[in-house]
Length: 392
Picture 1: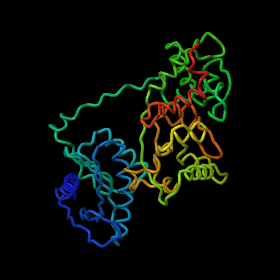
Picture 2 (picture 1 turned 60 degrees about the vertical axis):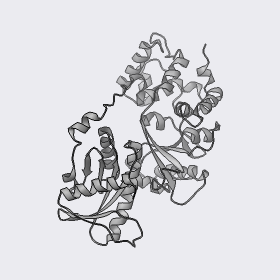
Picture 3 (picture 1 turned 90 degrees about the vertical axis):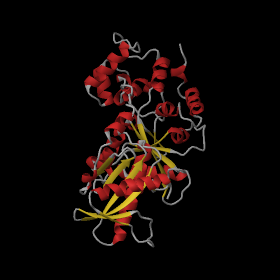
Picture 4 (picture 1 turned 30 degrees about the horizontal axis):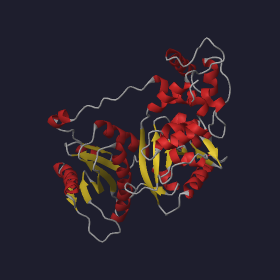
């Protein structure tokens, strides 16, 4: 066991020992490699531990997902009532990451015991009586952690504002590249009705656009001006997102991804499901370079395809034939949970039955991607968005 792995194993073991719980190592010879069996509070726990070299949420959450699956298999192997527990440790984990992990667990694994620990002494556990192990970092170490200061969300590029901006630009973009009503709007009421948002949301967007000089509300119909500058500001804005590397459960080629998304989309849209049932299913679509390729604008190859999912769901991942297990270093695909889901999924188009992010969203997303994203964005700008980006 590597030194850092040994440290994390020790942190978890110490947490149980300090609660006076009994620890034993599982016998070797099982189908899976396991870490600890713990007894305490009248319960037995099968504990699976994972190490992350960084405390970032896009590292911690995928490893926790993998540990959950392994802990569940571990508990079944024990052969008696045993609670699966998944734990991830990292040198330092920020409070914001702890909050993100808790929200993720509430949606995806409410029945599994889980925990995260770090070298500052922080311990956060959830479920099945594990909360007694919780501990905050020492005050001295807490003072050493720099406070993260992030930019405020500009009102102009909130999620629903981005969706409404797509409506205002839609007349000049072919329907096969962007799904949105095509019309001219005289006022906020008409825009709100077409976008399916509140009148207040539409009014606030138009007021912000007028303040920034991108629309004249005295003119009818509404017409955006200085569009190249508006798109430049939009491209520079970065929505927060989470990414999860995944691999095929059974090895497939790249073309299989479109087929499984097509099948999943058809399933949740089937007549046998109620609107409520459909609403509970995460929306999915191809994104970034994979979407550009599907829409006929492919220019960069060799990048793992991205799939947008409006919330991360292990059950849906398995239905798609994908898993987070062992995917961190060599992913077959990347699941991206966007910070602007309404803008992404309302404007998504269907190409040969496969849902794809719209071409404007693709342009925004690839423009700063390290894998020749600027080249791909320029190709989309030249062929699809030239009428917007040419200054008049």
